[in-house]
Amino acid sequence: MKSGRIFYTILFFFVFTSLLIVVGVVTSLTVTSYPIFSRDGLSFIFKSTWNPVKEDYSILPALLGTLITSAIAISISTPLAISLAVFSIEIVPSKFRAFINNISDLMASLPSVIYGLWGLYVLAPILHQYVMMPLHHYLGFIPLFSTKPIPTNLFTAGVLLAIMIIPFASSVIREAYNAVPYYLKEAAYSLGMTKWEAIKTMLGYIKSAIFAGIFLALGRAMGETMAVAMVVGNTFTFPKSLFDMGYTISSLIANQFPNAEAYNYMIPALYGGAFILFIVGLAINLAGLYWIKKVMIKS
Amino acid sequence: MNWAIEVNNLNVWYGDKHVIKNVSFKVPKNIIFAVMGPSGCGKSTLLRAMNRLLELNPYARVEGQVKINGIDVYSDNVDITWVRRQFGMVFQIPNPFPHLSIYENVALGPKLNGLVKDRSELDELVKQALQQAYLWDEVKNDLKKPASMLSGGQQQRLCIARALALKPKIILMDEPTANLDPVASSKIEELMLELKEEYTIIIVTHNPQQAARISDYVAFLYMGELIEIGETSMVFTRPRNALTEKYVVGRMG
Image (cartoon, rainbow over the protein chains, first blue to last red):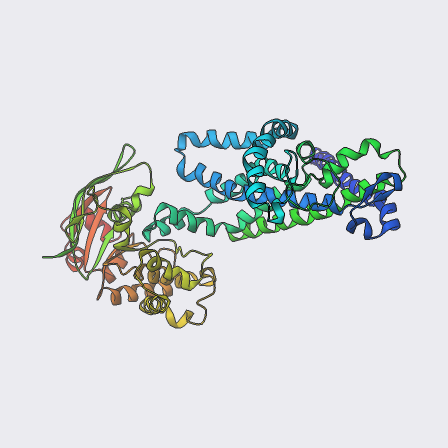
């Protein structure tokens, strides 16, 4: 009885501490960014200048950079993550399945600076030569591809993010696919479905889980800092095409904070960016959790 | 005589375990044929060996013949999806696809099989199948709603409609009432008696009373062996084998 009470006291202490830390972070985000919001109001969000000399800051280009790179990442990684999950369950012989899943988990656990280095020295030149230049050359009349690309830009960052988040989305989808009841598989095959038709039906059954996986991966893509900062170009301009160099909010913060002390409003501005990223990321993660919950209730 | 299905020297193994032992029988058309036996005797395995659903299990191995219309479903030049489409199957757990609508559940089979030319033909076929399964009147205004909103008994009748929409000759039923309440069960049994006018029904049951109530012919399966087979009235009134007798009077499993 007595040792039980001690255990609960310790448990409560640790839980309370973690909660306190979260509250502390949110509070300091709010408090520290307050000066920039009170000075500039919403124009801090909707302008496109970053001029420390004039103490004129705004976040829109970086916010757009975050949204664009994440959108590229999600559109590329979603089909790949679904394919990887289905492949590892339906196609790979069972003795290699653990191997594939381990590789996928390993991909998820690599430090992002490694992705950054690889992205900068391997991926970016390859994308530049074989994807971006041809797209610009043949489809340059489409605004998305209108800028003459250099290797580091929003597109490269998006592709690198896609590679980084595949294992996250894929593992959620894999778990859900594995949890499809056997009697539904039997139902599908008893109707004379081919393997492909049955897979399509099963994917329909787990579509909420697929959405959940995508949302979680999206949350991660939006917050990713180091790898993106190494390949995104780090240029504060309003992006006019996918091949523009740019910033994301997190890469902006990573690049600017060393100088921030020298200015009056740069620290609040960076915190303001962090605050907005926090809000957007929170919304997306909540949406992802909501979907997962829906899936769990269903099954 | 033209049989609905002929099973010759059928053997099934799961890994090293011999679960169906040299079983042979023939089923006439338009009857209800019940396979009864205690749990684990191999009834469900036998059923799945007929439409080759057993091959979903990577450890299952089958030897022997299963002939429908004189074609051995295990011969090399027979396509497995074709085999499965010759049978309608109803399972122990009502298993409509919960994410699809009532309509789509029934329409799925015919769409995959190219049984219909256009939407109106499909609508007609879905309606027919639901009517045959005695479900139409209960769901005709809710066709777009998800199948998961139906009760267990309704879901099972939806599964029967889904099987009927394939236009099969033979319907396989794996303990179709095991998870239903008595009212829903008796509805399914009435339905089976109607359906045998058009189809041959092979039902697996662990309940000898059910076999006695609805079947015309019955087989008793025990530990993978076919112990006795014959007209239901004969098997239940004058069983030839002591094991069968023990089973039908309820002193076994």
